[in-house]
Image (cartoon, rainbow, N blue to C red; front, side, top):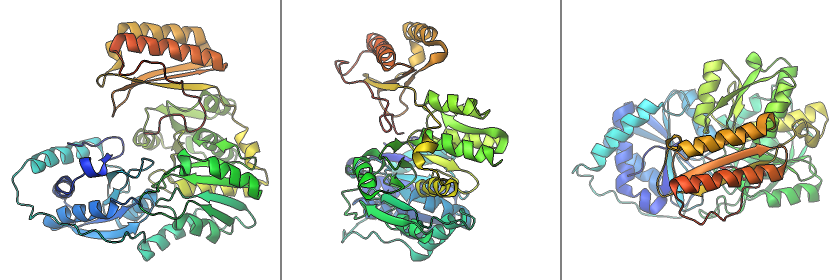
Length: 465
């Protein structure tokens, strides 16, 4: 049975999310949260309407009203949940392929549920899924897929995003937007155009199966070419559910989440808007970010991988900016979760306000070569089980000193051990990563021969949780 991961329950739509499971999940959510109503929205996957209908059936059986929002980005649904003070469920698998899907549950504050609440839902789900309750055989009659959003809900979200510009516009700015054939395909172009930008849109024709299909934030190659060909000021690539973005500068070069956070933090710090002079980033953020911010007396609060941990650190330290290298960036003054369109607006506003190209802003951070190696093992492991691995990590850290970083951790969702190395020289990073990979294989075994390529350290090569 699926359990809550870093981003709700997620898996193969047909095999892991059958109707019986989703109906039971709806009942479990209702029994734990006791809401009068729940907002429900989704992305553009073909399985979305079925899963939404099954979830609504489970909620309805517990006398909970379902308010359908249609196709909207995850941050839009979170915004509406916080605005109306009611919980929400989001049917989406983010950047995954179309055959996957999932359900994320958002609290009435617009934030992901606390671990304890998710555990209570899991416990209720386990009881409910194994019970003999008569579900009156939920039937779903498929029809032509609809990708429409509730008009009022979409309008409220667009108005909210535009309000974050505080009257400033993007007049005259040429932007290329890749919508990933996902949840932002309609509101994305709309908000940028309403802000005054000239927008060329790609991958905004969802058909239920083309979400994230060689497009969006994980495949920005077409966006890079199009920005250069059109002479645009910048490009923005959303992921399938619109909660993250990768940018492209006027030269067609990628600008990832670390570079976005660096230039945003520096700008906010100079304007006195970076609360407590710090931001929160995950351990995967590049050493170059830390160096660039340290040089400007900006502190970095480091968190485990996952936006949940970033948001928790922001709350704990009173911060207004945080995020991950993947482009999942949180501006807590305006949003409760990562928002690709909001981040895109902040980038475009910075470029227009300063009259400086995006490349000069991104150049404030010098990326350190970063290598990520994923070692498949026979079972999920705790890397602290191995004394030999700990010694090897200590040795590599001693050799790198202040010129690099080492991170070795077990995946929270898969039987993988992830090895990340940063060093000023690519060859040094490659050698150190291969050295630790061999120790992992020796200690835990491997399901492959360990001969696969090392991660390149380029934007997008790092794991996206």
